[in-house]
Length: 218
Image 1 (cartoon, rainbow, N blue to C red):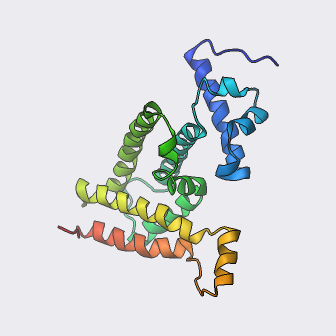
Image 2: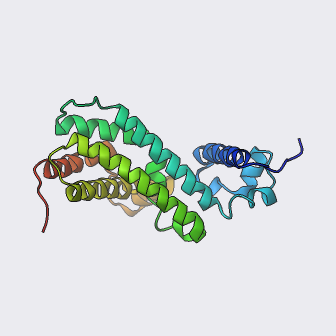
């Protein structure tokens, strides 16, 4: 089928979503290294030149995938709580962690967001991602404010920052490649990768306790 140029903004958005859908599938099966414009063109009706009309690099595609994944996780997390019901720190932590672990790609990509992804995009694409991040942050802040009604906005912001930083920093330590595992064995090291859920929850409970009791470092 011959490729037809998008004539309207709606058609353009449909094309972009088609690229995102294909890229998501390719990433989930082939990983970050396996995602490229050649693979996308083989999976869709887009030629490589046509892909460049929408995205300059694969990292610009990944930014949009990240944004969609984050929105999806926040929506699922929000629906997991009943409005006006009081939850214990343990209950909130379990729900938070369980839903986050369902979005492994979100954690995986955020772990390399600042060091790899954001270094290979245009300033315009990054600015749009930052705008979307502001909206996402407002949604998650609103949810945390409902769960911890006594907490002030500064403590809520610090909690969200710490909870995300913990997840995205811990993940690479827990998900080692075959090469890394083999190297550990050959070195004679007794290092054992930590269990993500157990380790994350232990620290998340502490962060939530501090948030609940307004404990902060001055």
